[in-house]
Amino acid sequence: MLELNGVRAGYGAINVLWDVTMQFAKGEVTAIVGPNGAGKTTLLRAIMGLLPLQRGQIELAGKSLAGVATWDMLERGMAMVPEGRLIFRDMTIEENLMLGAFPKARRHGAKRQLDEVYAMFPLLKERRAAQAGTLSGGQAQMLALGRGLMSSPDVMLIDEPSLGLAPVMVQEVFAILAKLKALGRTIVLVEQNTRVALRLADQVYLMQGGKLTFAERAANVDVEALHDRYFAR
Picture 1 (cartoon, rainbow, N blue to C red):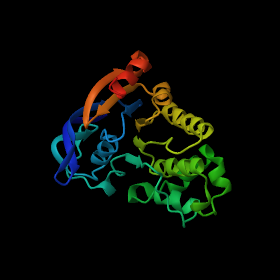
Picture 2 (cartoon, one colour):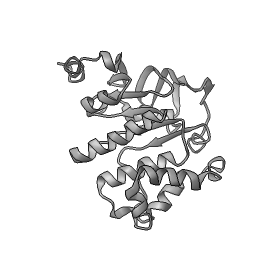
Picture 3 (cartoon, rainbow, N blue to C red):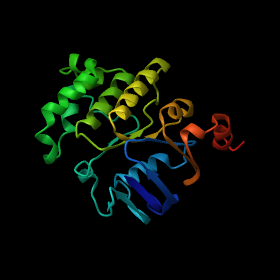
Picture 4 (tube, rainbow, N blue to C red):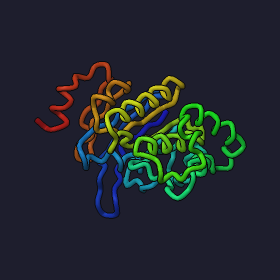
């Protein structure tokens, strides 16, 4: 469904991604793991058009994303839940959610989609009039996920959802991701907690130094062997 072929990208004169080729199958969870500085977040930014490609191409459902602006990606059926949540703290929870349905093509179904998000996240419904800044870290992650769902995307790019969360909240967030997988969402998951990511994933990619160094079906991955690669042991 989503394909990267020979992608190079970076920041100005600094190249970060080196000829990255990956495929993300429809309805599957693909986990991208790797140490800090491996290029995982840069990869998601390149997919979303936040960074220009130096080389290579990205296609969604067989159509090139070259030249597609970031704000038009939602119209193409792709949404990103960024690292660190990046919610609008001084706006209400419901206002944050409604921003996820901002594209014109999505606005007509916003009320129905809001009801679906509230059904998945009852706490957000209970506190919909509260400022987003009053939420805990785990609750804020749920809000970020809910906002991403408001455009009813076919593909979700989710960056480090467990970052800074207590173990009990990590389990809750990944239970929600499992529900999204069961509903047929295509999920590209960047996650440093490899054990939790592998339990959810169908496909695993390991990145190191901006390069793809390992690719395997999750069911076939030996976690300890993956960690040996991960930490270059």
